[in-house]
Image (tube, rainbow, N blue to C red; front, side):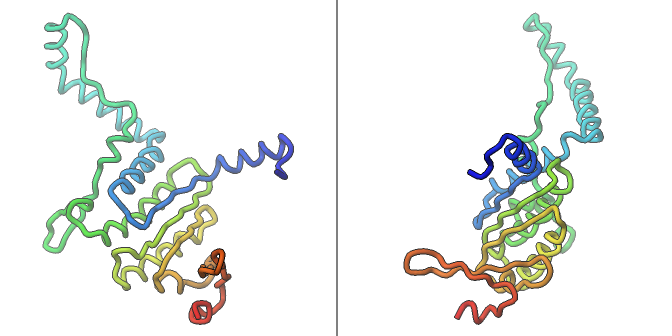
Length: 216
């Protein structure tokens, strides 16, 4: 209600246009990865190099299917040729990562790897998108990143997310039940503890306080 002038509204609109929010649920289905890969496509689709590569692909597609176009023209009496989609977001959403297993075998991330390895990919994909897309500020909301991770893997991921969040352009909100994440401290880290009260949820500022004292 205090944004009561057109100037204030314009300033707020400009600010919001610079910000994007990405939500990662606790249960990380294949739809989560598909959505991230769509965002990755949107982040790189405007680059000159990508446009050149797409043009080369289109030209070669027409070259390889020229005989089909000629046959269709002769049969139907009209020009018809195979053309690639102008928007490759759907194609990108079906892409997969090839991971190298012990022994040198290549394995599909989404079909052959476990949930833990899959989850470790998410921050790197999000970081890539944040570097490449047009938004100036990125806010990530990640629920229970420790799901399907061993405690050692969770500790590594927690430190990685902390490193990523050191930039002014990225802010990360995490909900967690794991000490790997709620024990994080230092520059750029703020902790809040939520406790169920009689009528509502009590929010405690946990920054700079012992975890045991807050949970007691």
